[in-house]
Image (tube, rainbow, N blue to C red; front, side, top):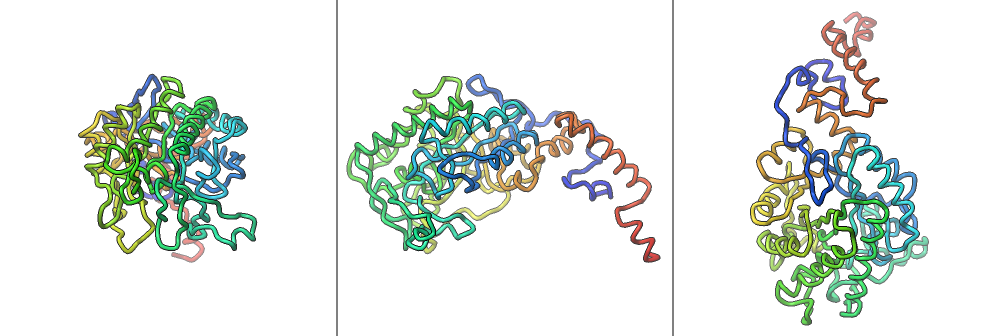
Length: 414
């Protein structure tokens, strides 16, 4: 790595910009239902816990807008609750009321204006709702929180089984309540489409409501919504069909799965999720977004997938090879070459980055410089016109042997 590269905050090699490599798959467009993602790298939904009563704020516009300015092909708004009980915490976003649409419209409009497909993840936390923020350990809310003005609320689930030791027992949803819930999903999706989102993802992973109906760990019902795999699939598939009917034909529908439950015995495995993904695609899902774990907070039987680079890629490859769905993959995707190889080697069709984008919102622009050598052509011209001369100066100084510390070395006589 030369000195100029060391000074440049992206960590991408300046030398790579002098070559003319062939086009890489990461930057190829992908058209789904008439909507074209300009490239295959997007921003995964990440909860920020910054909302009040479900409403977006200027924080959300700035937070999400920087990813569009950074070149992401798809930006997915964080998990957004379909009803107040479905929030993870008091500070989650919501789309359970028409009054939420105006603020969301501002977000979607900004993303689209600046070149990203606007996406949103709809969710219901189910029995894993009513908790504190992650920086407070994500523990269930209790009387102490109530005294502080953030009281707990009654959680719900397919069965009256807590998510883990010391977690509250959820209310078991009746069949009439399930029907009402399906209507809430559809209404929230309609609001999302009205707000201008062209990519809607259902959060069916991490132990939340949809996932908890699917898994035998959390669903022990004996009616038509529990029992064998087909009946446990019923609720999420009915949600998918209701949303597909409620939104315009050109809206892309995605579904995030936990590829494995991550428990020692009795949980779902990848073969179960492949089968569910086939049914989900037949019901109207276009994209399967691959994650894992979360069905239980009990770590005594924890077999979650351990973090490594692209640690969900094997699951994504399995789903892609055995279904007709387009497949997205998340999980420690950090490097442009790594991301493009995942597309080229048919592990996934889309790569979604979360924390990496938080660390470097311009990741896509830097990836283009690293892999496609197009300098600053894809940056907003207001940025690119300034960064081009900066790069020339960095290269000139590197060639001269001068470093940012040269003047200090001169003072010390080094």
